[in-house]
Length: 196
Image (cartoon, rainbow, N blue to C red):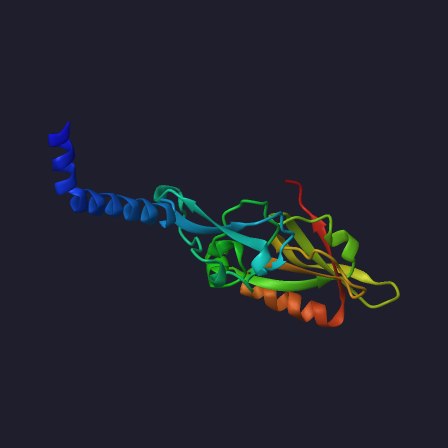
């Protein structure tokens, strides 16, 4: 027993240094970020519109679960505009925001076209992905309605409307966008919804 005590006394500094190194290693492991890739998700259910810092949070996912276009930090997405409602915890990617990635996801030859329809209440019945025809009504008395754009998809709808109507974003061709712009300047627009 005394021999063991003498041996421990001789190696006391080495043992102390080893224990200190183990403590430092444990401390470093405890502050190291958890494994996985950082991605931005919705912090709560969001109706759409401009994102604030309180709307998003960062979680970590296995690398194989991270889709293309995912954002890895909150600062890169705050201020962006959601193309539609999202659920709490939903992963946010470039195609969920209005912008270059979003337009690429619409498909070749399509553009995002803002259109104000006269009936704001009717817009609340629409959802992204609905397919509509856009009608224009010219004149006040004996107004006739004509179809301006056929079978265009709703990309986003407003959370609320105003007395001037409600703004929709539609996926249209360039020709349809021109026809809609001409019709908006001289008529009231409405939509009919195609069955799903």
